[in-house]
Amino acid sequence: MTGPTHEFWQQRFEANEMPWDCGAASPQLGEWLASGALARCRVLVPGCGGGYEVVALARAGFDVTALDSAPAARWEWPSPPYPQVPHPRGWAELAVVLTHRNQGF
Image 1: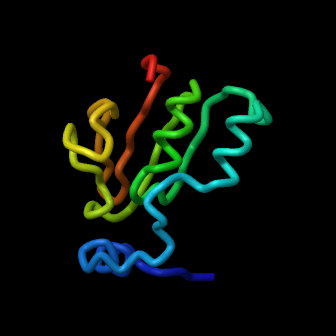
Image 2: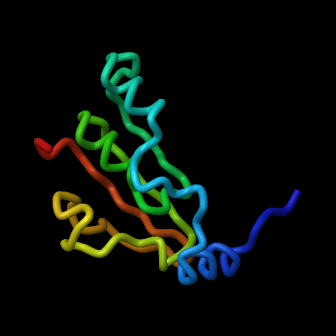
């Protein structure tokens, strides 16, 4: 089974064609975090895009690693919307690799 290519995702982000991006973390994730339903642990967020879930999880004390194959999906550090996100740990050829540890968000 094949899926969209790296170039497909890069073009979507460059053209700002992301109808799935609601500008915030998923409401369901917010409910789970608020209720304490999720135990703090290490989490991988593949296809992190705008990173809303990454920030929500990091603020809640999770150790989060985020991946995205489109360089255009990278957040702009340290400018908004996430001035509190640490600089990336490193970049892989086709994946943005970020690690966020509980930094007292």
